[in-house]
Image 1 (cartoon, rainbow, N blue to C red):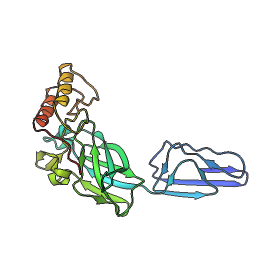
Image 2 (cartoon, rainbow, N blue to C red):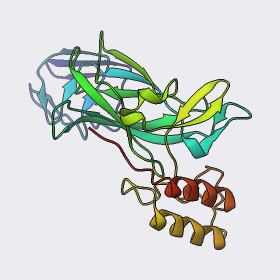
Image 3 (cartoon, one colour):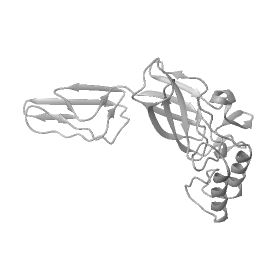
Image 4 (tube, rainbow, N blue to C red):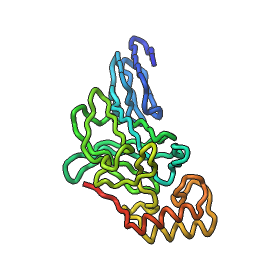
Length: 241
């Protein structure tokens, strides 16, 4: 964006803009004020002129390349998953494991998602915490760090990729481990309350994007109840540091 105002020339150049909701305002005179409705984060930012910021301008996004699968959404016959959104939090390695940064995006049919963290640092270790609308929250086994602004982590290759080995094998060939499905009320445990809610919605043939749709097919039915029932019987709960 180039804004010419009498003798003032203000140049902002953004590459790979991550937050498109930012709003720029300027006023007359020899100083141009830029007000951001949200933080402006891009891979690179070049600023020429006088800048007064009402938000944050940062020049780099740290990228997490993640692979993770969701038990109820995964089809072992086709080796693909129904896409859905998940949130991945970067958490500190020392109790109380505060959230350093968070990002929500879609895991595609191959379980892959790309997450951006402007507050991350190279070489700093973090736990990865995955949150999904009807799955048990799952943490990475080990702390991981960004190098050169990039980090890759694959939860699916082994049960030990999750903290406390808290995943379920959903495919033998290829070997795939997935987040446990069925924590409908997101209290960290799959139990009778989750089963009751899913059973009631199945009885009423509820449809749409609802938490009791454990298989992601937009229908709440016996298949959803079965998954919740099995995991409730096994007292599946979140395992965290």
